[in-house]
Image 1 (cartoon, rainbow, N blue to C red):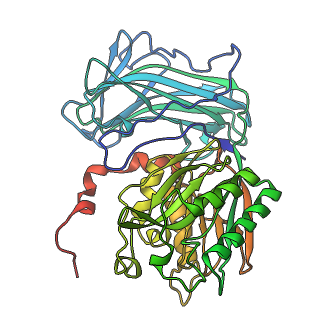
Image 2 (image 1 turned 90 degrees about the vertical axis):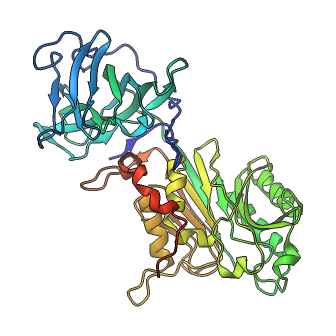
Image 3 (image 1 turned 180 degrees about the horizontal axis):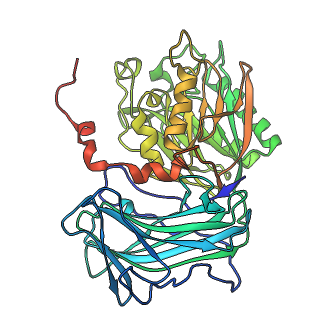
Length: 467
């Protein structure tokens, strides 16, 4: 059964605060019943607001504090930075397969990292038992910083979820995790029947083609011919390989350096415009006197709209004098947010993580290197690419010269493979599809929230490299 999510999370690795835009396109719901009782937390008893249960951790001395407020319920833990706790309510009247719009609002004060402190979870139930132990985390928080009070934010969670198969009830939980001096005010929460949201289907292609005894000009002809094939199939976006004007020629790297935009992006742009598709391709760039290994992004109108400069350079490149890029850009398209990596980048797990934290949904990978299956029990390129997709919760689309060009889903499954044959392979994917791991849940939503960024200092250690 499909479950759909709206919006793109944006949180930059290393930043103290992750800020996400509120999702657009949530289906409008006619006036209908809010299944949450006492959605504004009015009234108060010794047990908390009526119809709500305060949950606390089982270990002593680790619970948050709760108190009433004229605008809702305040949660904090002045003397316990890593306390936890929350409010939950059992919801009745859930219909299996029905979609429900969930929204929760509030404020958070004295906080540098609100992204990981507040969570909203919906767990569907059948006869009182959870249909999945992790439930679904609701998209958010979508944050609006206070103009008058630094470190204060208004937040909103908003999502549309499909009730699990067999579900007849739900539990909605408003959680506070590790406030570290922050104060959270929960103000309102609603759960209402909703219309099914539309899918976000994208036809994604990748090319497996290694020219031989060729020239840069012939290479462009060959790769543009693949784009023409993609146009006939109605694809939305196609990934070509790394350094497409060098591979299979007798040229040296210095011979194919060119400015971007330049002659090759003009040729690729003509093919993109002619076939009304997005194109990603690797080129060797020269800017002034500085050479880069670069991948370009060209839109459906044939315009150069972005580029990524390869950050991680193997000995074959740094010894030639290539300069590493230092940025991890993401690019917004009409179907979703994408990123680009190049070849050796796939050896470094931080790369895919950074792009996921920046909201990338698909990572394209022009790659000279290999995607061979495992050999002699060793994890080779195919396995590593699959793990990278799974770790980050993204679609990963390598275009290679050895092995197979592939389209890999966020669970690490190969949706399409060139299977050793030259040419174009493609798959239609739905970027609104969610799929849970058996125990953990939907990793794309959970992973960023469970990161403990202050502990990652060793990643930035400039000291000695261990033997």
